Length: 217
Image 1 (cartoon, rainbow, N blue to C red):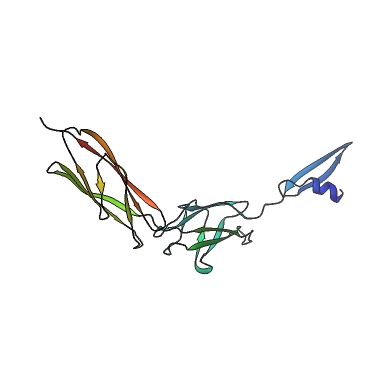
Image 2: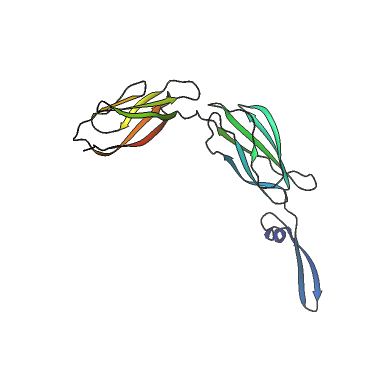
């Protein structure tokens, strides 16, 4: 068989090997394919967009003859950890702390049962700054004035700006998280309030809640 014919019989990178047997005037080909090499398929970080303080994991799909993989982890170009994956479908956990602007790189080497390796796959992700945190501490009506208190913070200690994104006419919010709204008998019903906590990089978290005003007769 010519080399051109052999090339034509290549299927997904595996050679088709024929043993020719002549039976009368009929040629019979018994075909087998060579075992595929160990390989890495899909690789996915969890979470896909990690932030400061997150516990980073990676999901790995092994293909071909791969039965396990060795992982090398680097942060900003410096190796910091190694771990193993045995094809059980469980995410591999990276147990090092993450901070904003870190670049995490994982190099994955697949192995078959005999210890042979396949092509090394690399995947990296940029760690982003943690989002601001905001919560409603209290709310009440005092002297026909609705008052509330919200608290916001930056997990990384940076400054936070509070913005009243939505609220009824006359509602005010100061820089310390104090909300005031003068009431009168003409004001009644359900009102939506949205307060945004924004950090120095314009990342924001929005607190949304509802205020219901009913007057007793």
